[in-house]
Amino acid sequence: MQHLKNYINGELIAPLGTQYIDNYNPATGKVYSLIPDSDEKDVQLAYEAAAAAFPAWSLSPKEERSKLLMRIADLIDKNHEKLSRAESADNGKPIQLARTVDIPRAAANFRFYATGILHLSEEANIMENTAVNYTLNEPSGIAGCISPWNLPLYLFTWKIAPALAAGCTVVAKPSEITPMTAYLLSELCIEAGLPKGVLNIVHGYGHKVGAAITAHPGIPVISFTGGTKTGAEIARVAAPMFKKLSLELGGKNPNIIFADCDFEQMLKTTLHSSFSNQGEICLCGSRIFIERPLYEQFKKAFVEKTKELKAGNPADDKTRHGAIASKQHKEKILSYIALAKEEGGTILCGGQEVKVPGECAEGWFIEPTVIEGLSYTCRTNQEEIFGPVVTLTPFDTEEEALMYANSTQYGLAGIIWTQNLTRAHRVAQRLQSGIIWINCWLLRDLRTPFGGMKKSGVGREGGFEALRFFMEPKNVCIKLANSQ
Ligand code: TXE
Image (cartoon, rainbow, N blue to C red; front, side, top):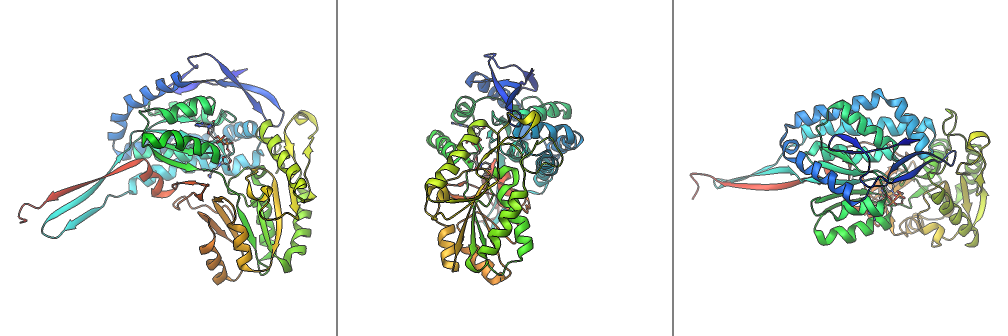
């Protein structure tokens, strides 16, 4: 049985406590590797390595950091198939999704920040005949990066790449549910010649390793992606320590479909925005609001298409609906389907656990599920399910659609379908979401600010926002010699 290792001070080492955690393949329901059950002692070791590496790394020319990050990106590309298979086996996502989205995006994250850092300029502000001000962007220090299990390498690198590019050294923790590709990345970092201690990856439970990173007095910056509840716990610990926080949390995103939309385009994309990655993407549109004249036509066509989406072995190229990432999460999703029925919902399709024959017979699968007839205020429509479950609700006016859409505690993403672009811009401005797509979904320009409002998070990732998050601006004001 493969024992994964922590990556500390440039080496792959066992946890100091020599304890391990079972790592499951969600498609088979079986343990297929073991990960370090690290604790605060392993985090301390990682911190010391990151601290020792910080002076040289933070003062290194950005061109040098850029070259190293590009080398890591090239190695990700070179190992694309191995990383895709590992991601699919670890998370349960279809291999086709890992190949086309997760792994290419991980390489893109490194390339984006390897080049972005070369174009980040500093400001100067002139006080006429008096003084010159210039702003230094200095790396904040050791960054703590903590990531979730739904898009493991994609989101892990989305934090690490800007942190390293900015000149920070890193103590990182992937989710204990999907550690494999982070482990494989550490091997690639060694191969790329990343100096020891610049990146340290400590595997283990959130309440032990994640909590130790959050509470460590020597780690002034925390970038977290995960559940809102965990985000609140991290903020509770980090705020009194005056740590800088980036919190990318949960969502309950509206998908507003007006009757004048491009129906075929909308239908095809809505299938993806509802069920891609088994609905385990915080950007999925899980509450679908349809203008009443289109409701029956949409319902019929959408349910028909959803029924064609069959759960299958994630390792099979043809599979488009994989396994749920953990047994616990599968139970959570099923509990919400049961709740939806109690709250008066009608299951139009799906709603059941699926038995996939053969090697996946013990795996964790749920049918894509469509529910109608719920009030917009019920728990099913207010709480994040984070699985292959969407609800349909008709609306009559724009006002009503906006009231429904903005009624939750979340404000991450929103989707609008209409060919009346005046209306599209008007609705976009009034939607309480940080990320809005009009007549598309998950079209991503990495330069754009990424994140949500309300309980979907604090701060933004992406573009120069992420680089600046890992830096401290310092203003220097010089009096001009001949000034009064
Ligand atoms: O989160 P958890 P999950 C959200 C998504 C869903 C959740 C799914 O909407 O709500 O994340 O991810 C570690 N101190 N997003 O269930 O449990 C844990 O070990 C420090 C939003 O994994 O919060 C894991 O590594 N760390 C996002 C990580 O936190 C702790 C995109 C996340 O775990 C900890 C993706 C603690 N006390 C998912 N407890 C977006 N908005 O972009 C756990 N962890």
